[in-house]
Length: 358
Image (cartoon, rainbow, N blue to C red):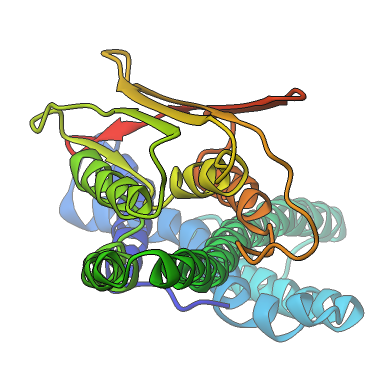
């Protein structure tokens, strides 16, 4: 069990004090104050009941429930309560004998003794029932607190598991991104060493974002768009004139929209992987738009040239990785649709995001 925080313990203490303060304070507003001695005597007779309830309640709450009931020792718990309630009931009986007027005379007649015995049974029964109810109340409150703690622990464990899975997916994404980009630079070296050098410099900027700047769970949209723009420009270096690249990104810098990093890069990588041909006309159209209802729509259309087994542009884990991250980061708040025809590949991702003020 996770330990209670000091704030939670203080709140529980205040609730207990208020509850018992009301119980002990109510008679003070109803007793008639004929004389101080009579007032004190009547109050002493009254407090025997709530004091006995407190003893039963807190002995269960602080000791018996943890020692026996939570360890599934039900029989020991019941026996302990039987002994405890019997002891407290006898103490109450003797307390009433001392403080309630009309005590038994020195030599009572037989019929008086019978009535006395019946009265004792009545008083013992009257006292036992509230004590049993106090026991049940302590169990109910303790079990409720334990259930709330268990639910909080389950939520914390689920949160930790989700964070660990996200870290694992991100760790997979970073080398996957690097692997694809290095393959593009490798192919560029043979075509233009100067462009390859520029690409390596541009890659270092991208890697800074991939490895360091995207550590938070969510980043500003404009920062992610800058990364997308730089990535497309890096990929453009290796393309020939027969490839058409169109890119449209949000220009606003004050929307305050936050987004999970590196979500679009898998779709863009996929477009460059399957949408470019060195011998045939090809195209890649990228459109990312932000709407006032906190929607971000990413649509990518590209020509489609299936790769063969000798292709070195990646292992194809990007889209699977993207789907898993979307389920963890945007459950029920995204739409991902991918269509493929003989000569065209269309991917569309809609995200329902939030802002920094939220």
